[in-house]
Image (tube, rainbow, N blue to C red; front, side, top):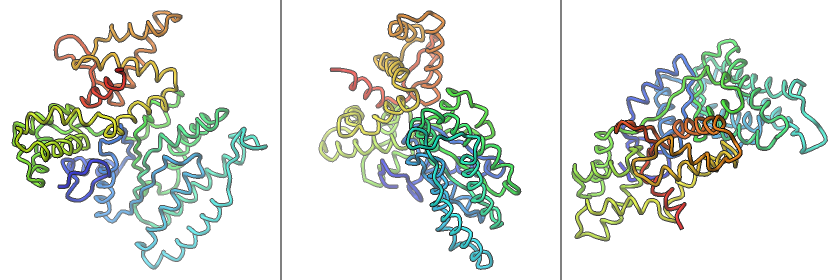
Length: 410
């Protein structure tokens, strides 16, 4: 196993989630999956492993990352372009027809434009032919896949970011367009004859569940089977670190591996890899110092400028999801909770909001707190720890807590 802390991993570098891959592949036999979670917890790695798994059962599997897509047409163009590499794997009997149909769809997509209100002279009525055209175009792409008489898995990465892009770029009808897109995804796609031959695996680092709940469209994703990636158990995390230590000839040992897991706290593989990287670096410099004494400073190395780029996303995604005002409230709550390793009591967090919202009444304070509390818990910023008898909201990831303190300290 290589010490990789960045790019998605495959093959021998994919560790600890083989059973989860089989479970997700089994779910896909009958359901589409929505896999949500923050960046750097291994969503892309496990989705690619699922793609490899279903291919062993003679499925076709394609991947599209739609984070850069600004509208529905860009989504369809991405989907279309991902089909091209699959042409060579089709039987010669259907390849010719399939190729001609793909080329025809490409010409239609290139010639089709979605006018955006405020960006030109044409206003869009979502009930008019413009909306119908992209939906029909999308259905034609899917009909093409169905006609190939094969099983397909379409992995869509970062769909929530695309939907936020639509809302941000179209303040008049963006929410309606997102509703229409998700309704198409839920209803029209499934209404196509033999649509069961296509399964969807949707992932995102920004909460789709948060988006739909905020805009009153939670029903649009209720047909997706919601899944998440839990952290490794302590034993699996230690096994991973010991395997890395063997690969790089680092004398780690069971005790030191356990301490490193405890210091990371939320044992997601990326953060274990990152912590191991910094520990390796310190051990190569301080060769005569006991490895256990290097763990604490190695965790602090993770949150210093130049090494902390991943943590900035945790802060930035709040603004993307919540808008500037609510994001500022969320940052204030997290900053307060970060002060103590054991977290903060809910009544003290509520008091933070009361101080920030002097013109609102107690009911409004409570409403905002409950909403933000649930979002921060769902998106893995913190969790309710009740082991002491008093509930305290504490950070999942200890390096993130330390980074939050450093960012908010002069």
